[in-house]
Image (cartoon, rainbow, N blue to C red; front, side, top):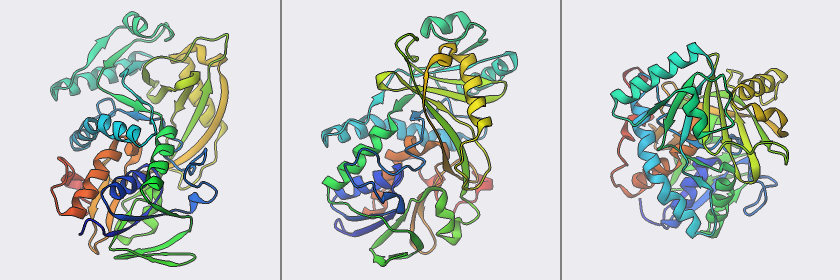
Length: 379
């Protein structure tokens, strides 16, 4: 590829926008196609309401890690190392993505949950990752608002968090500033060198498929490998008479169910997330809201008096083995999809991998494990 090749990027979520911004900054001519861009031009107050817009914003490969997912952990840590420079580059473009460095507290609600965290700590320590084990009283020294019945937890200092909405707004504006063209059309077909929409055919030297869960509908090699995973999320705001949100990101296991609380500027708190195999349904259910609030109140009791600002549901792009699909498909289309819960985390390494493929350079470390033509059974 040449440094001024034409890229057609399908998808305006965090992956598509990060690739677009980085590619345009490197001298490529870039077009981003996504029907969700209708009514959301660059610089608007609200970028497209996709899964990235509804994310919690955790950049937490260590606390997301689990047995058998070592390749995903290594890729996540590689991307985490790139995040400070990624955020600094966005700030240099004139937009702050709100990177937070306080770290993550992982807490357990009951004895069974505490056993699960003990297993996680043992596993991470066996891999050489830094984890501090904390009894319940020590947890409250770090976060006084945590519930008195919590059985203990872990402190993971290296994890980060980002304000996902500030990030998307920043990348949309930075891409536009770099000359990215945004097209609000429904994509119906993707192939080598072309993207066909409901209104036109767009051609490019390279097509990058970054359409999240919808990628499975646009390429046959992803048809049975990328699947939609529904997740509900709430946004709350502290009131004058309540405690402020916690200073750390708090991940919890409550009777086996995951729950996370991610603080935002202005006293806001993101609470998530349920996960269902529910196709492309984005209806917020009473059960989902109830489960999230009940779990969160056991972790951080003051949340019961917070203002409930927003309820929403999005669709993540699940893969067969928790790794995304990054690389060239058989027909030459570049895949950048299937990031599951880790789209925000993996945005820097995914963008750098795509740019390396365009220039013929070496991809970042650990990206090879995410090749789209891999056999998941061996990963």
